[in-house]
Image (cartoon, rainbow, N blue to C red; front, side, top):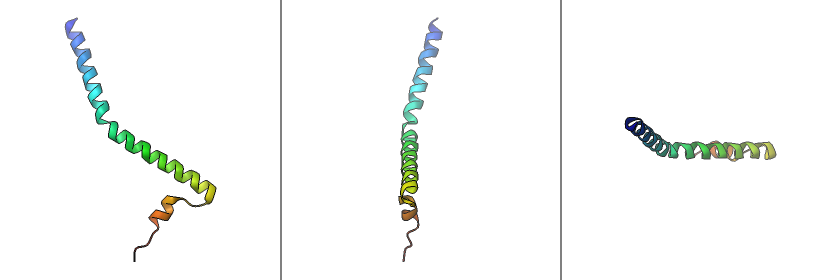
Length: 60
């Protein structure tokens, strides 16, 4: 019974470490998704979005 409890504790520690490690990529993809949704909504309403304007700037 004691080894089973240790295995559960080890599995819980591993899961907590993995979740902490995945925090930054999760926020990155969340911000990226929100940006894409905002660009899509702006494109539907106005016909152009801030991403097209930013990317198509020509440097002289």
